Length: 144
Image (cartoon, rainbow, N blue to C red; front, side, top):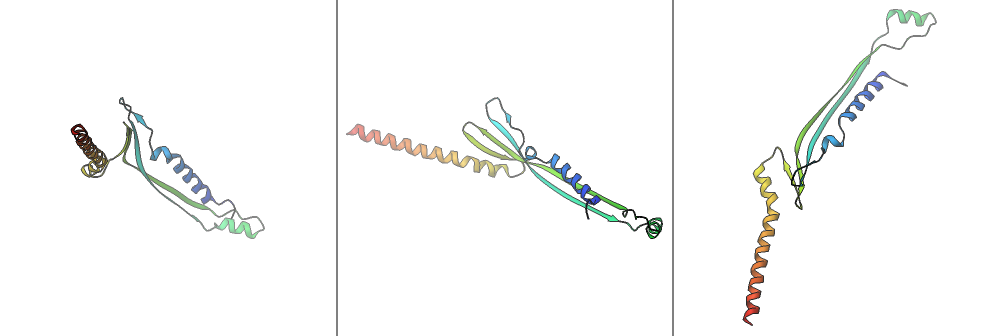
């Protein structure tokens, strides 16, 4: 079938999608804040693609030309291709002050904040117990 017109339609559409969607579309350019934190936008990319075509019946003139010994022209072709791309922001990755956090755009902020603060809360609680233990150890040593 060689070089069919549908191949060029599909190639052009796929190249266009490739130019639109790259890694910088999904993971955006980082932005540095004055306090030294770095914010990186994260997006979700969805795309769809379709192509199709049809060869039409030869005209009466081309049939007569083929019957008289001439070469028949290729069948007329009609086709099209299309694509759609959707980019939706998902959230932001915040890196700074020794921590990395993901701040989602479209979910329940209260639940996400609780999940983000649990490790810090556990560190504070364990630190309080360690301070109390050290104070009680110092009092026992002072009594001896």
